Structures are given as structure tokens and as C-alpha cells.
Length: 327
Image 1 (spheres, rainbow, N blue to C red):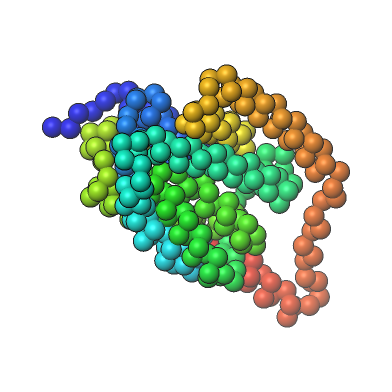
Image 2 (image 1 turned 90 degrees about the vertical axis):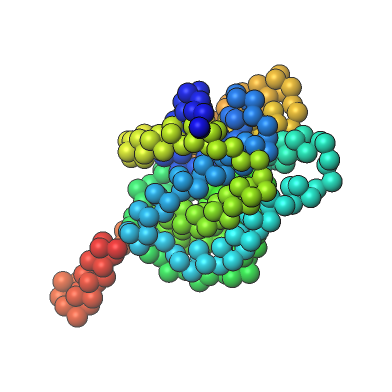
């Protein structure tokens, strides 16, 4: 019989809500919570978190597939690298020459991954502020299918790096890949960026889950308890995401990831507290500076409407507009 832990249900509910609200932070929050709050063995935490993620990812992916906001070419080339790498990540973490100190080594690797995720959150917020010229860096996502030229080799390399990271730590399928995609393909629309990341994460997490079920330290009761809370939490978070200040929540998430990463790397409570306070103060100061500079920049030029006296030009423009709206 499966043992259901009420505490894990509450923890899964909170993490699921944040994931639904911001679209990021699943592995980066769930695994540290299991290690620090519930005192779960690091390898068990990684294995159980990855398997739980497998049941949380498809819902959002299906929505974006139905709305046609997924670049399937990008998904294909990412998966060529990420799927085998994620499966191999389980073997790599066991093959590393750490012996009895495997748990300590895994905490160090996980701590580095969390610091990377926190950095990527800051980078994404900054790019969003500049791109959308909004103080919170979050503009409304237009449902459109931007055409981009796929850079095959860098995309496969990104998939390999992300796959290894997810297979070893459960971190990176959303927080790191989505920022790397934004840098590789700046022309990709916000909706396509999120949709592509969600769809490629499904086979990526599936491969990592298979590896951890077969060769990891997966615990069924722990995973089920997390899912009981995480699935409704993610749904509820998604429902309120349009009305919540997602940019502010991502800043708090970045500080939380910074503190968790430093703690996993062995930093004292004093160092973690000082770093968190410094990030809070300096981060808000930087946000104010960027916001004031954005206010001084001229607004983007409006798209010129075709002249009414030229029906040959106006008709295709209207067709394009209608097709864009319908997509």
C-alpha cells in the first residue's frame, strides 16, 4: 500500500502553484524542498522529483500544441541531444568517482545548477524588460508562430547540456533551456518560446524518469504524495497567472534559488542571509535604474496600416492579420 504524506502534499501544492504561476522553478524548488525541509536523501529527491515532473509537464504542452505555438523543428533538434543525454545522466552521476560521498557530490552539483537557474532568471527578466519595455518584463504573449532559422549544431549542444543537467539534478528543463532559447533565437515570440520549451521537456523528462525508475532511487509513495498536491497547485497557479505580478514572483524565486544553491554548496546561514539581502537590495536598485532608463526611451514605431486606396495591398494584409489571429 502506498504511504501518503500530508506534509509532502502541502509542499507539492506550494511548488505546483509557483510553477503554474510563473512557468518555471519545478525541479529547482522541489528538490531543495525535499532535501532541506523533509530531509530526503539527495539522490532519492532527484529521482522522485523527475518522475513527478513527468506528470506535470504534458498539460501545458498539450495546450500549446493545440494553439500551434510550438516550433516543432526546434523541439526535434533539442530532443536529439537532450533525450539520450538525460537517460545517460543517471549513469553519469553513479559513475563519477565519489564512492560513499555521492550524496555530498550530488549536493554540490545541485547547488551549482540552482545558482545557474537563479542567474538565468535574472537574465530572462532583464531581456524581457528591454524587449517589451515593461517594468515587470512581462508583456502579453501573442499567439503567433514565428519563423526562425534553426541553428542545428548549437541547438543539439544545448539539448545535450540540458539533458545531462536534468538527468543528474532534475534542474534545467524550464529555467535554463528557456533562457538559452531566448538567446539563440531572439526572434522567437514569447508564446512560441514557452510552448517549445514545454513540449521538448516532455520527452526529456520522460527519458530522465525512465533512467531513474530503472537505476535511480525512485520512491513511489513520495512521488505520489507530491503529485497529489502539485497537480491541483499547478492548475490553480495557471488560473491566476494572468492577474498575478509574475515578474515580482520571479524575482523572489531567483533569491530563493540563490539561497538554496549557496546552502547546498555548504555556505553558513550567515553567508546565505547576507547574500539574499544583498541580492534583494541590489536587485531592486538595478530594477529601478533599468525602469527609469526604459521610461526615457522613445516608444516603438507603430506598424503602418496599408492605404485604403490600394485594395490589392490591403486585402493580403487583412488575410495575414486574420491568419495570425486564428493561429
